[in-house]
Length: 518
Ligand code: XMP
Image 1 (tube, rainbow, N blue to C red):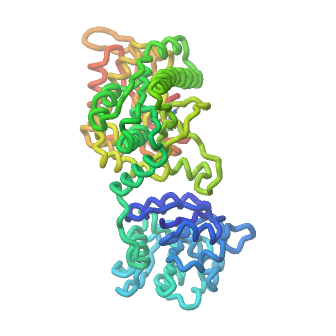
Image 2 (cartoon, rainbow, N blue to C red):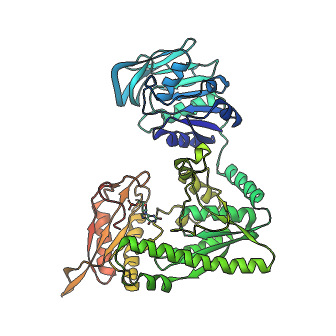
Image 3 (spheres, rainbow, N blue to C red):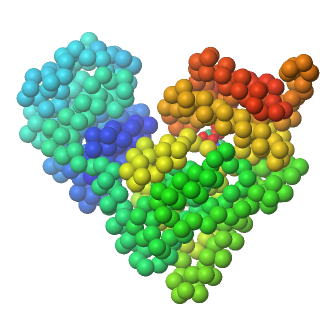
């Protein structure tokens, strides 16, 4: 792999993704990694990330000096560039010239120069630094400068060392991706050969090795991660796999059919559907508090899944084939964020489906552990999964249960399902799916307002549209949807959904609002 050394800012994941976009497999490692541990991973390239500190401050994140002696081509970025300069005999100083944001650099772009060769001399890059490299290490060529930073990029082709003061991984750096690709392909000579096809082949082989001839179960939620992880296991050991889908009655329109028909048709998976709508609605009767709803839905989900599990275990035992494995759709960011990248045992168990039993006696199969979300989608497409599932926006495990403000009833769910289907249909028709991270449609069941429809007065409920744009759901902004699209959605919902006489738009960012209303 190419190792991305994380110096503790938010940039490492972005760098790892950019490297993969260049069709090269990358892994994130903490800066505390030793040279021996790096060597054991057999890296074909190393990228040192940015970070929040000053290299000469006490307690600044350090790098084992042996790492730059392993003979592995290395690219330093921002803080990583300064760490490199310092360890290799250059000089880093606090110049008093802080550069932040879009900055003009003058680059040396003659063809022999592997890193910036072929790019324009004048370009805009994204900077964020207080310290600067004052003197490049001996044997290094200076490749770029800005008005206040004389050494903004350097290279030592013989040793395979490169560095840039700016952040090539952010889109604001005009030729950023090109810098990363030049480092990988031209400077380090790494071929662009990592793609979805390879990942599938590799994961299929791994799953076969892990599972052997034992049986496997998987919980399908209709979401992207569980759909793709299940499809990979199906591809690997199809006749040993049973997928379980719990229909809790809180799904959106068409989701059950998507799983039962389209997904099964695409994968051939053996699917068991648990009809638990009545059980869930009975348990939710009379409950309005959001946290209580979540708890009830989580608990009922576990019950339903455990029942299916007991039935399957009994059936499998009768056939003499014990079930030993459970498929989980854990993604790489979950692994990295919970310290999994460091090799520590603190792995967060990530439950897509709203909570699986804590004490399941299964070994986990996690074929997406090394992948980012967009890669998971690419693999799903390669495996032939329906676009409606692979391209699906995030949807909370408790489903429509937390999109009805007030008590959850069958009638209210039916109203909300219709309104939600209309909004989704119109947003897709307007080509807005890429722009929107997700768009909760919320029924304010405890609110009524006066309206007039036909020649009568109505006293109905409002529907809230909550379209948001986001990178990771941690922060979000409300999406500026075109008025004509909003008008069409509003018209259709008030005409087609009984009891709804008003559509309102949520124009709050997160923070202070959350994405969901509950
Ligand atoms: P909030 O509302 O906290 O949502 O801004 C952030 C993201 O998390 C999703 N979400 C949930 N997902 N179970 C889930 O599986 C939940 O209880 C839950 N609550 C919120 C929400 O849809 C958004 O993507």
